[in-house]
Length: 401
Image (cartoon, rainbow, N blue to C red):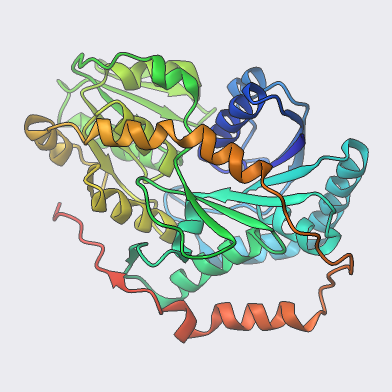
């Protein structure tokens, strides 16, 4: 099979998933013919991604988040209006994706949670199998723990799930553990971790590993370290304002994103501190590391991720990048049920390959249009409070700072 990827470029998570799935597909005899990746002026495609993937990479300008003045929390209003002003640009980029599909003629297109990919599926209605992959789609499962929040945060989260998966044949929901699938178009599958992590031998060399999406959180870690200078920290961030391996004082070093270096420090760390992104939590779980998660403020899906990780006993959640609770956890830590998690991960390749290779019934060739009534009915249903709140919500309990 020839397969094309469409990848959200925000953070490292979806790119890591794409790298792992490309490895699996190649080993099963399939070809990834092209990778379309959403990028922006704020987020560049990391060098390690370009080096580790073999398919041609085609950057496109895709909707992305905008943050507050401190570069910590997501500014929803700014995100909405900035992306709204770029609708003509996004329409042009959908046309570019369509040209790439006509050139490569893939048998399947896999969208890693990129909104532009969802709109491409909707408007172009390509003949290829249309599959979407993300942990976020687990929100359609009755066992998914919804965090308490402003009702619009949850609505926007579910609407984003809908927009990224429009007109798809199949949703692959990545999960920390096995859950029975309840819907025909939804399959619960293991996380997508790169083969390199399975070759690592975990040790504990006394340092804390941190990963922060936004540079504002790096400042928060630096401030905490001023009062705790004996604690050794290695922090990875996407901040080109400082050089790689920037060390403002003894025992704290900031690294640019580098997948191999990150995994090396992950294997040897005594504890892991991060925003609540799904992939790096899974990597730390695989290596049996104590984990503390600080969800990005305003990013509802990360609050849910933290709850889900706590549900399976993977770690603890907090509101601030203050490492005291992680240091306490390290002294009490007994590794997450690594055998159970390893067994679940060993099912990843056969389950993902089976879902991608599975026959998809012939779909109607009638082109879906923006003004088609069922589309608007779907939007209305997603925004209906009775629909949005049909799943039980759980309190997002965070320890007092």
